[in-house]
Image 1 (cartoon, protein in one colour):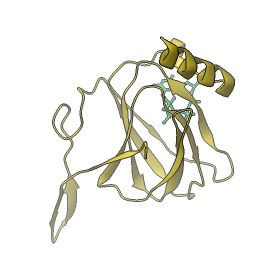
Image 2 (image 1 turned 90 degrees about the horizontal axis):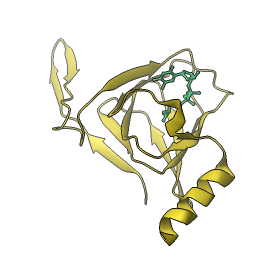
Image 3 (image 1 turned 120 degrees about the vertical axis):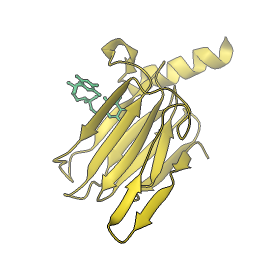
Image 4 (image 1 turned 45 degrees about the vertical axis):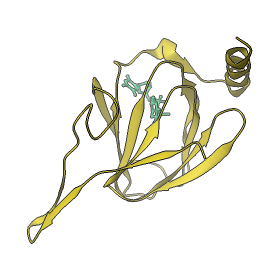
Length: 136
Ligand code: T46
């Protein structure tokens, strides 16, 4: 299995539920960037890339979606439907996000600023990259 779900503590009382996330504590890196994805189109998947130097945690705040994780050898699919769990996405994992419910909101915490040069957006290039890493 190449996925790692991080469980956050839910603080519940009669007013509702609160989840606190602290960089370097509840997630394994300091947070440098936060982005969120809304207004998702259930029939249009996203992702289809990997990163060479980026760690992220993806949290589905509302609704649900599925995420395929691929390390070049194994593919796993994870259902994200719980806002008190975060999916850890380390380096060199190809990801595909799909089957969004129309109310889906995804929050992502990242350890680096946005850098388009860190993306591998072609699957054959990703496999070549993984092969060169295992040879070197
Ligand atoms: C990832 C998955 C989970 C920015 O300008 N700044 C940013 O911080 C990000 C993340 C994106 N962008 C721009 C780049 C594109 O023009 O926003 C546009 C959409 O990005 P992208 O097509 O990469 O979106 P997704 O949903 O396919 O992927 C995103 C992240 O880019 C990626 O790092 O792991 O969410």
